[in-house]
Image 1 (cartoon, helix red, strand yellow):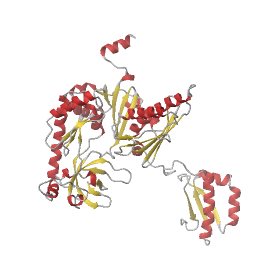
Image 2: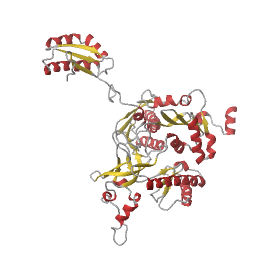
Image 3: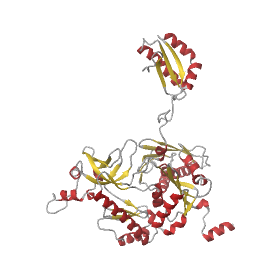
Length: 523
């Protein structure tokens, strides 16, 4: 009681109530976690050899125009060309070409630029300034746009957009009105626009003035590169994970920033000092012998969060399955046991699942089409309550989302902006045994296949007197024990002899058949 009173008097928060930003910097990777009340709410990881290019600005060269796809493929200096859709090819980024098109207008009126004008504005070989809005994913190249935007801590500068506004996530009408007045007083250069980010809610004008000055300085460097560099070239590289974390996560609500690397701490202090000297007191070095992410339980939480099956406090659980373009989240009652009111139990379980599902989307960086299969609810008002709860939880998501009400089938459908690969795809590789299926053939199945293949080999190669079959040791054990009689029958029917050899390095589904005399692989 006394301790709580002291904390309340001096404004000290208990660790369970604090908002902490953890930055772990190691030789091969950087990790960032945002904790609220000890629970991981945001998590990002970046490998040195796989740095994100989303947000980087390039001086590109048009490689080819595909009118049938309504797209341009532009060389930005990477292995694969960037994909620029016609509707992302905003003419404001190419003043000279626009003037040529505008001169075609009659009576001095400015003509409307259509998709038919794009191939003339951007012929093969033309230079264009683009920004990556979606990094390379799988076999696809980067998605780029000429709608350039430079994100700051509180503002987003749009060099080619004259519209300014306030983030839609700021919903209070009085606060929106106050922030609009601040925007009107900002000295934004003509022809540019700014968007006030959610982080700016409740702040005074001086924060935005400082942020705008930093963004304009960034843009000045981009303009210099546009004049001096030859395409393809990088004009502005998206900051690494450490700088992005400070920019996006370090708000007034964050109580502490803990860094476990000396050089990284110095860099964080430089970044923070440039934007908010008052926040420097929040930056601390983690000096305890226990690793930072271990001390705060982050590793355990992340390990649990990335499992296919996620248990909830009520005893229910989620099953998360990620495919190439679709993510399914299935809600199951599991061990949940409610009271007499069955409908009320289902509602409370679905509300808990909605909160965890929204958190999983952020933690795993899942994108594309997402379908959530909640437990069936009979009352429409319960469905609406779960839908509103889910939308409320999505408000803190920095990625753009679009959510539809729960359908008659009990499914909630949504889309989430996909900027880069999910965390799972970034840190894992395809299993060499199952090759991504998640399952391998049973030993019995392999025995059947191998016996069938031996018969086929002798039919196709009747002149081969003896073959040797190299298999996985577990498969060989099955063949020699449970199927020895079947092999004896197969030997009597065959035109030649066969033998087996175990290969400890072979996967369960892998086997090879050789000509024993020539060591030639038979197919």
